[in-house]
Amino acid sequence: MDSASLDLVRRLRQRHHDVVEPQTFRLLGQEWDLLPGVYAPNLTPSAALYAQWLPYPVGGAFCEVGCGTGYISVLAAQRGCARVTALDVSPAAVENTRRNADRHGVTDRVDVRCGDLFAPLDDGDRYDLVFWNSNFVDTALPESSDAMLDRAFADPGYTTHDTFLRTVADRLAPGGRVMLGFTDLGDTGLLGRLAAARGWRPEPRRRAVGAHPDGELRYELIELVRA
Image 1 (cartoon, rainbow, N blue to C red):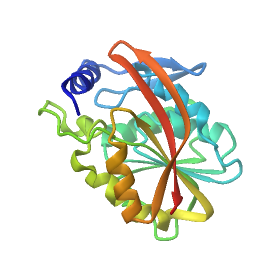
Image 2 (image 1 turned 90 degrees about the vertical axis):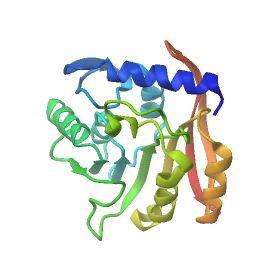
Image 3 (image 1 turned 135 degrees about the horizontal axis):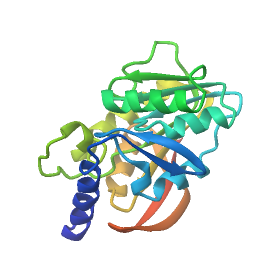
């Protein structure tokens, strides 16, 4: 990653660290809770893009990896998914998602669990769509006061991506799909090589350029298909 891109990530990360009190924000016409230490969808235009681009499996099962505030998981329930599982390694994010599920009256359909990737799931859990707005920065960031929050930004060497690519097939129902949120700050070449080694091929489904206070980025919804 070049220095300009790294500076952009640092500025965006600092804006997240500046959130030190619980807040609310509006997104897609609804009000949402935001807790300190949780990735803030309102700080980047990708949040609304992914929410509108995802092909929610109406009547089916949806799994969100790295749920953060849980807005995607809540929207999945609102848009007709019969069963939604929201996963995050951060206890703060898990609490945040539970608050938003309660705020919007979907706690009966949104099951929130804490742990790394698919570790919190039961053996038989399978999904029609698995989505991860991945921590696509492949460069280690300078240490900060909140290492858990920093995991929402960076995955040095894409070790977590590789684990995801190795294990996600075991979590798919017949005909199930896998999608990633990604940007041009990510290493598409590395993602492609890791995916190929695990039997996947990344295919962009939607793209858009968005501007925010920290700079302009190209956002992508990538589907992983069997190679």
